[in-house]
Amino acid sequence: MPEITPRSALILSGGVAHDFPASTATLADVLGEAGFEVTVTTDVEGACLGLAGDARPPALLVLNMLRWTMRVERYAHLRDEWSISLGQPARQALSGHVRRGGGLLAMHGASICFDDWPGWRDLLGGVWRWDRSSHPPLGGPVRVTVATGSHPIVDGIGDFDVVDEVYGFLDRTPDVRGLMSSPHGGADHPLLWAREVGAGRVVYDALGHDGRSYDAPEHRLIVQRSAAWASRAPS
Image (cartoon, rainbow, N blue to C red; front, side, top):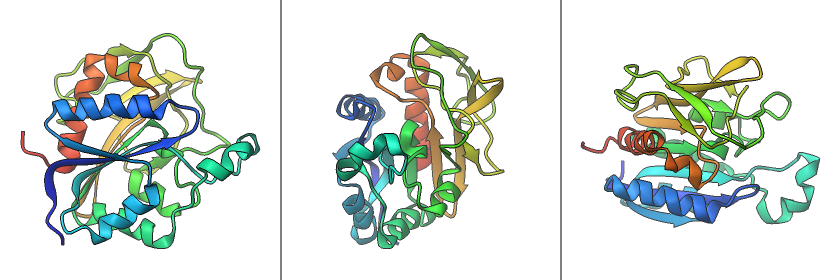
């Protein structure tokens, strides 16, 4: 396989209903603090295809985006600009990047992305379903419970409050074990998980609606640890 560039991160950004330029800039700062050299692009298809042809692909692919087919009628007016359906070569390149040993850190809206690709659920570990998934209105701080001691990403980190959207009722694969969670709608919902896929590692963090999410120092540290774990970066 191509030689991976250590401590390098490529963020795929852009989409609807969020201020992605601002949140991506904050996320890039968070990763930069952890020693990552960060590049940002909004060319999702091109970036995925590049993973297959790059002689030195990034150690970590980060998704901070919200783009999908937008078949839901209330998004019809945005389809021309923001809808996306990854072609088969791009799907294979993204999946291959992970299965060959690359890292994937997917934030917040990434679980909604690529809704016409059944393999995305298998790769990510869980996806949004429009007929069941939901989140409470964005407002005051929500309490996040951390399963400290369950994984190196969360070891020694206590529960915390954060201003964010809490995604729930996602369609998850059976192996997913939540590393942090928050309740709504009568259920407790995993907000973070980490899993190995092939030779690679995947982390999904359901938080990250906007820059306020990273104001919580606990969440900031969790994101940095998630990036390091997924990319196998030396501590």
